[in-house]
Length: 187
Image (cartoon, rainbow, N blue to C red; front, side):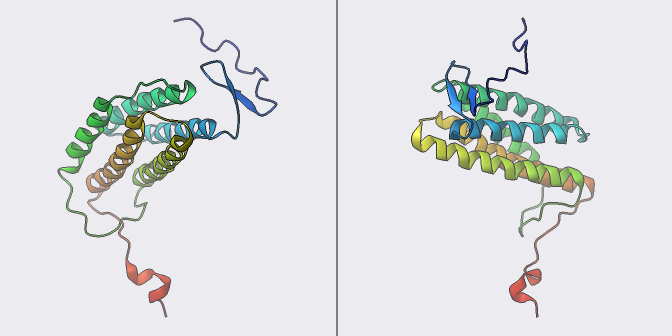
């Protein structure tokens, strides 16, 4: 493969626009560019998680997801391009089922935290939800691949399940929300 990016510092964005893969330029505050940045953010968050998660099964899943997120970025950079297919969503659903099988039923809301791995997986889930909301906003003005939005919805579910899986395997405890800590119940 040849050099795709031979010059990183191009100065082409200095006036507030960014180049798309289809050759067009868009304002940096354009919702499509915004979505690209958020997809990059969830991918970078997964990169942080991969730097310290030791479970090989989780590492393989997250590494695969990172590649899928690059495909989503490619779709966003080239309006009308479709890369994310229903089998991507099915793969996430299958992984979610596999990782959730040994977990106890969820009886309370879970607070992010308990360990660094769990906290970062919950952070990735929250970022993923934001990306999904932004894609829905973009889809109001520019039609997107509907499977891509489904993918992000399932990914946030999978990240939640992975956080539970890690908590369960590390110490068997999750940090639950306790309503008696709410301001309304304090005297």
